[in-house]
Length: 400
Image (cartoon, rainbow, N blue to C red):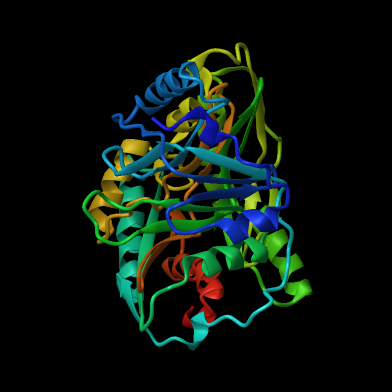
């Protein structure tokens, strides 16, 4: 185990310094709450689905007892219960405030590369999958299912992951930006999961718990008047409000298992990203005992995952439908990424607007929630709009 002296680096107080210091293999995370950069590995945490939070709490207690000051676990967990995970106690952690918007000082080279793009499935096949899902919903037993599609991109040169991360952070400082090493054992090259998620799964600070589910979406337009029309359309859409209600109900129900008091807004609001508008509800709770390891941020994240925003209702039926209808394994997409410290505080977000990058290859997903009344072509257009976050950062927005 690394000497405790190595976990006391000189503080870095400016968010730009953390971005500049990031290299593939590091863990980076930023949100309105602040920025975090972690390097090195004191130990890893391996545990089965449903037992990860307990294993993390035990590991952090052990590391703290060994003399490591205020240790934390960082990493990512995949979508399916048996999915790969990457959870580590880092040797060095540096923190800063939240990042600021800034124009890139240099021209992007991503758009100058030659790319090959393979959609999985093809757009017409995705629309057909949506129709199959609607038939299942009409038959009963399934209220909602989220169907995703994948783009696999290959460049003629190695992708500069630090540059891509910096462009994501600067494009939307309010997002939860992240970069996680998810290299599988035995792989010769580093594989990085990175993205800019708009959706907070759960955060905990002392007694306060916050979740911010998003469901019900429309693409952002270039025209202000059209954006106002789309915001009004979202707020007035029966289909989107039903989709949103599924998610909020489940989030509040799960948090009620941890919190004595859970407050849910009477009406959703609309929040925007550079590419999308989403119905949003900020759900707030207060836990009775912040020292209970069973109420850590990761314990609540495990209990919440997967929400209907990325899976469906009922959960098991929707997950089975996803396994049957989607041709590609989601991997880390629509899982969770974040951090938890020895006190149980932490922040975990839903792994959307994300991609896995390895050498010259990029693999990204985007999904749409299917409920009764969904239109296959509209859901296809929604996935195309969601791809724009990563494609813009790569200089490839014209692909959508």
